[in-house]
Structures are given as structure tokens and as C-alpha cells.
Image 1 (cartoon, helix red, strand yellow):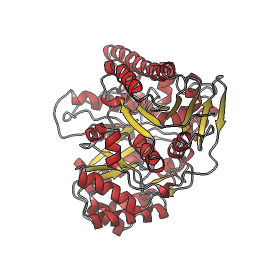
Image 2: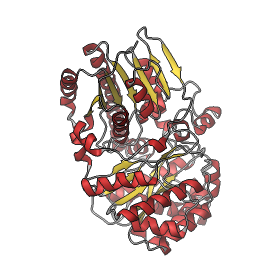
Image 3: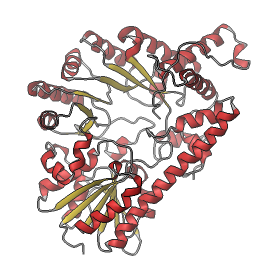
Length: 529
């Protein structure tokens, strides 16, 4: 029988410095329902590697927590990471004509894989440290990575561990309240090492999620202030009704969208802005506005922000199906600083990936922003290059639409991100690729085999080489020199040149390709994968 919980230690496992919004929301929720429970947050993202074990030991010794909850953000080797770039490594290994570059890419790949393997080992060591020091303490593991790979994680966790899939507020509260079977989706390994699965019966009622009590959060997490000069995550809803072939949000958060009260969202933003001086807000929803209902919800949030006269810059992943000129105007008036969205200039690719919108709808929404007073807000296009179904013609269509956006907003304001689909377990694109023999049906999505990892960053023939060489040419042009050009634009320029050359000379596509190294230097920008 679980003992009464009097204290909880949240341990944010090492990752790059990014606001720990999930942990903050969970700790805030538990405090509002059980203010008697002592909570503390230990954020290892802010602690040097050599000091992390000692920091955990000291916090355990002082608090003697009844529950230790680990938050694990990153797990897959090729996942986005500011401190290494798997995309550059793969491109150089596959497509560089330079033996030096290929050799260096092998060395870099070994380093990346080593770092990720060591990170996983260390994270499980942190858990075993807790179990050794506090044999009766309940261990909980959650976070973005764990929600995707829970069944793999639970195998390596100590006994008496619960792995939470998806939302953690009600699961953690039920654990704090002494429940042997937490609410929500979870895997549990008991004292004997046996694993059982629990499935969510009812979704977490997000409307009860009031504005975060940041005064309390600061009292249990003083380092909270270290994040105020960058983007702070604020969530407005959960759930996604779409079935995009490469995405798992609809499984992690459910298909039904659930909404926080617009007044509470705006209050949260206002407190961050006016009390703590935060200027940058990132709305962390799967997509900030997507369905007709959620777009109306966004408009109410904009109305609340306007009424409170907040002074912020904000963004989030947008879907623009149901945008109206009025909403576009309100977005710009409340501080929209960039328009971030998935983009392809081909309706065929949109349909193949079941993205659920019409290209012309998206282009019309861009026109609304332009007519609504767009100034210098960046247009960030996350382009799933070489997705299943991509052809030279669909690629030309994407280039043409990007050119149209250059004309609409100015070239300097349009940022195409070089983005390849990362294969995630349980997605339709994974099933598609297994059925066609691209992946073995028993492959390990957490493998450290570099040749399998390379396949999970999907960029197959015949277009893979064309895109890869354009990417490497763009990198070669940068050469570390300062310029106002941007690498994503340069890649699309080089693809346009190569495709045009092939159109003019049918023989050219069968001839060895000359590297295109003319033009100005470009600084390297982080690729999104």
C-alpha cells in the first residue's frame, strides 16, 4: 500500500536550455490541489555535467522525497539538438565528394551516438541512484521522449517505477494522493519487476487549468528566472484531430481538442510579462490554431491580450485553414513575431501526408497577414523535403510558392527550414515504410546502429542526392563568412537552378553533376529535422 506522500522532487533530466513548461504545469497543478505537499524542482539543464550527480545526491539527502519524478525530453539520436547536427553528418557521409568530409562525418557520427548513448545510461543511473538511496521512494518518469518510447523506457527503469505517457497532471496528483494505480496512460513496474499497462479512461479536464502561480513556482524553483530572457512556453489547448502521417500528437494528447479558458491564458501571459519582465511567449500547442473552433478560441485569447495591454512577442506552430482578416490583424496587434508552419507548395504532398488543408487556403492566409499590416515578422517554413510522394514536379511547385512568398513579404523575411521527416514509432509513415521494406518490421527505433539511424532521417533516392548536394553546396558557400543571406533560401535557390538545368537539357540529369559554388557567402542556420 503506497504511503502518504509529503514531498515530491522533480528532476528535469539533462537537455539544452529550454523552458521546462511541462514540469512547471504539473507542479502547479499538484500544489493547487495539495498545498500541504512540499515540492522542489531540480533542473539539470542548468547544472554542469560534472556537478549533476552531486546536485541530485544533495537534494535527495536534504528533502528525502517520497516521490521523485523525472522529466525526460530527448531520446532519439537524430532528434533536433542545438549542440550537434545529425543532418550535417548524414549529408556529408552520403553525398560529399570529399574524402576528408566523409571521414570527418564518421567521426562526428560516432561522437553524436556516443553522447546520446552516454546520456541514456546516465539518466537511468540517476534513477538507480534514487532507488539505492531511497529504497521505498516511488519513482515516476515522464516527458516528451518518454511519451513516445514508454515501453522501451520501462524495461530499464528500477522496480517500483511508473512511466507516464502524455499528460502528467492527473497522474501525478493521483500518485500524490496515494493511488496504487495512477490516472491516465502509464506503464508500471512493480516491486517484483513485473510490468503492467494502464490506459486512460477519461481525458484530463484542461479547462480547470488556471493561470500558473508563478510566485509559488519561483519558491520551489528559483532558477525559473534564468529562463525569462528567452521564450516561455504557455499552453492554450491539448489534443489534435488531424492524422498527419509523421506526427504522434493525436496519440499522446488524444484526438479531441480541450481548451483552457482564454482569460486564464491571458492572465498567465500578463503575469509573466508585467511581473517578471518576460517578453517572449511561445504557445506550445501541437498547433496554435487549427480547427474552426480552435481558431475562434485563439481570437478570444487575442482579445484578452489586447484588453490587458501586454507588451510581448509571441509565436507558435500555426495552421491557417480558418484564418480571417480580423484574426490576422489581432495576431499582429498582440505581438506576433513570426509565422511558423509546415509548408509545401504541392497539394499532392499535402494530401499524401494527410496534413488536412488546401494549399490555396494557406496562401490566402499569407495574403491576409500582408494586407493586415505585416512589417518584418519572419515567415518560417518547415518544409518536409523528399517526403513520400515527392517528385521533381512537386519540388518545383514548392520552389515556385516560396518565390511567391518572397515577392509578398520580401526575401529577407522568408526562412525555408530544411526539414526531413524523422520516422517515429506508431506513425502511419512508419507503417508505410515497413510495408515497403524500407524498414525491417522488427527494427529498434532507439537503435544506436548508424545505418539504421540514417534511414530514420528520411531522404531516399532519387531526390535525396539532389537535395543533399544542394545542402552541402550551401554550407560550402558559408565558409564561416558573415552575410545577410540565409542557408535555407540558398538551398532552395540551388535546387531551382539544378531543376531548371535538367529541364533545359534532358541529358544533363544523366551526367555527373557540377557543384554550384557561385554567389555570396551564407551563414549556417540550424536545420530542423
